Length: 57
Image (cartoon, rainbow, N blue to C red):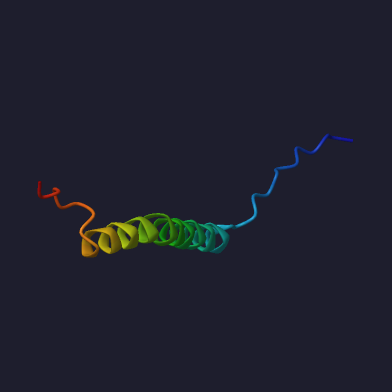
């Protein structure tokens, strides 16, 4: 009996990789919006209240 070499079949995961890439991109977008959005909102709020204006002596 000859020993047959078995080749490991790689599962075709192109679709899975594309879905994973889309998930990573959407996760980055959500983190950017929820990370940077509140900071920008706070800066706009403080600017509207005159926080960044120099005090008049």
